[in-house]
Length: 505
Image (cartoon, rainbow, N blue to C red; front, side):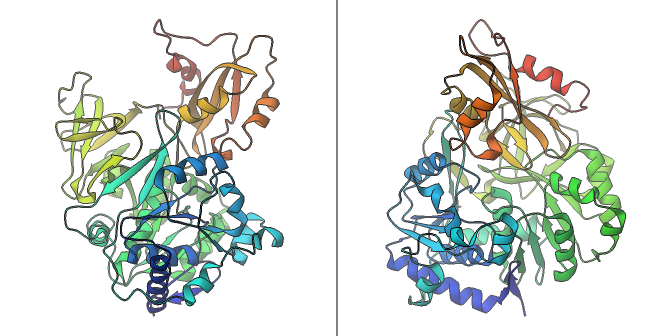
């Protein structure tokens, strides 16, 4: 029997569809109509997989909130997306304190989540006045005629420091489930009877999309773990005989650091395809994983706005160290100079892409942020292609930091830090980190008369920013270097950190 599940239990696909239909009926009864938004504030578990099906069947757009976030961030996103319903694990409900959504449904976290995150019994039972999703679902009539699936609504930090909504536009007349199935088979090598596994949080675009692909396949097993724990991950691969995985370089680094005995005790022969995207994948790390797992390690370069774009297989990685692969599913790339002229192979410029397979997009609250040229969209990075069309990424045009697979935007952190009375000026940038790819560094110019008090500044950030966005390192400067225009010379600040790193991102 094909099943879906988490670390606590599993259900068959038929039962998932039954729960999805009843859940869709419950959402419809609450006034959710096609195109409306349902927001989830949940860690990885079976209930989230069930809700993903329910939202899809209801024809709504799913908006997954980052549970590492601060209450202010959640409030900004919910105000922008106008979610009809918010479903949250009970221990995460405090993150909705500023948003105060009109309709909230709660989910009691299971034993695996409670153990993985140290959730207390009190927090697990918070807000008993709120209805429990499972009970609400079971008392609802199923939606007998599922509606066409809608694309999700993603949020990323915008240039203003506030979350920017990415509204995907499905191809004309299409059900987004069809889009997912085509990408699943055409890019991600999913097949009938495959078994997908991830421990990456489903609020991230890549693991969420891949999980949605596996669900859309209909006959694939799906397993999600509450968090990444190296030995547990290997044990689950062996236990579920997983064929398809999503993992990021940080995870591979931790797996390779396990003792040889721990690495050798699990049968990993079922793995057919493991894909990474979202953060730089150092060649030495990739080669080490290929040596261990065999020719199953793939990399994709993509963006939340455009979707997965390139694919680089193990043979490509070994033959062309550093490549992010070639465009897939009929997508095209252009490398442009600052004047907008198309550059030939080998010359570095700005990367623009066109990927019709995933549909178009616009921004909900920054309509002018979309940058287009020659029918292609800027993805904010610099790179070049070789004569065979393989992409090599050299640097980011934007200041985005990628740490542990998460996209972190300095503008958002700077906007929070500049509010601190102890800070006169600040510049935030990424520096190399062995495990996470990059770490956050904040260069701070103290306010006149203020001491360089790192502890006080850290205390100021509590509750204002997600902990994952707090700088790992603070540098204090008498004055920050600026251009004549007033723009900070971030490249000067970054330079000493990247010297000898062997890479620029």
